[in-house]
Image 1 (tube, helix red, strand yellow):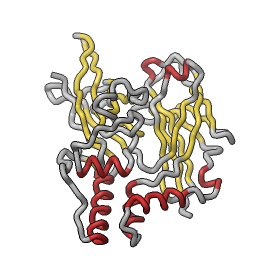
Image 2 (cartoon, one colour):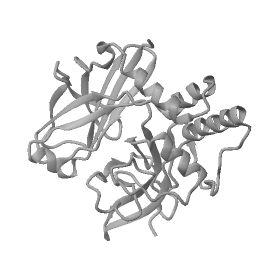
Image 3 (cartoon, rainbow, N blue to C red):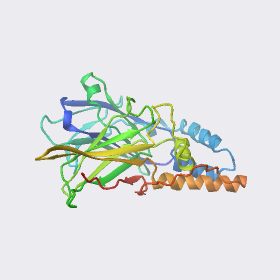
Length: 302
């Protein structure tokens, strides 16, 4: 059994922070990443990718209980941007935590990390203030395949725009994206150089990734609970003239890491079957990315 490091980040926008305490829980996911699936499929003599995926998933159910435990994980409240630690809370034996939020303070996020050494698992979620007001807890799921997005806000003169609020919308389905209760907005704020970053973008399943890469016509996810196949980024800019919303940039939720794993699967499939993996409408708009980090084009107000 590999040792592992647990880390979880909860991005919080203080724009509507009426609550003084955030309560939530930290869970654990046993779902394999597309990288793990690619490695297993490459080593296996099995031709069916789905059978390898099922075997890999079932094997996760045999891990020791302490591997899945989030007990005593320390949760940090950190500033955004800057990630300066403000205060901490410890996850209890029931997997729950509670941490106080300053009445007046900077935008912030929650971060927690547990090192057992080896694989890094992380969990991210935008705070659901409506849920908090109703007494609902904020759940974070630890996974090894969340994506991040970074970018920059610049003025028309090329100068960086600091302290701008950046919104990241999930795109799940063409018809249901606006109505899905899962499409909660993630927030960030630009630093003095105009840069912003958002973590915890849910990675599509391996089936969705393969479909997106090989057939861009198949993006009609009928279930809005599916992970997002894209993100839409906008910035809220305040000036003497008022508030301006810039951006509206749409970027596919497919990273260089996902693409490399998919190509490894395609190569293994051809080696085993002698056939090419079908690609009726291959993806051509891959975003610029490094590993699991997507680089969003500069946001510039018109």
